[in-house]
Length: 158
Image 1 (cartoon, rainbow, N blue to C red):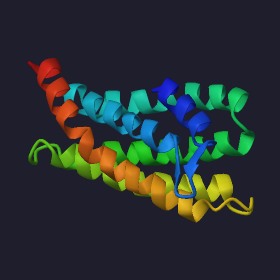
Image 2 (spheres, rainbow, N blue to C red):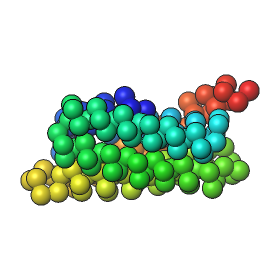
Image 3 (cartoon, one colour):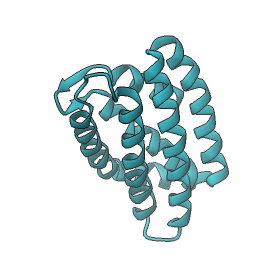
Image 4 (cartoon, rainbow, N blue to C red):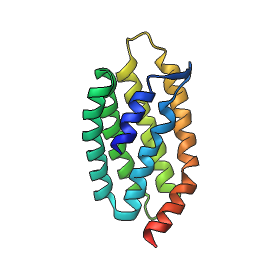
């Protein structure tokens, strides 16, 4: 989890185009990890993984990423991860795909709004465009990661 946070904090600094950074592709894997932990072992472990990822990711990001990126990332990460765990747990008994999809999608919206406003507001960077592209990729990834989620959870819970 910490590696995902660090990698995303580095990759978000490299735009692909005016609408997208490379971090948009790595960060959704954090929700995947949380959701697999939540399904396999429950919300307590998922929250623990999120907090550990937050702590280690924040320390590494503070060393290797600009302070504003590290602070924005830490704030957005822990708020959105805990939200993902809560939504997932509420939808746990629903169809297998609803908990991971709606948890990740809702958390992605909150994460994107928090991260980009804290990291880039007032910098002159076209962050609203980046946030829009980032969110679109995160929502796509929430769908694309459903098949691997299903396969991994079946293996872990069999």
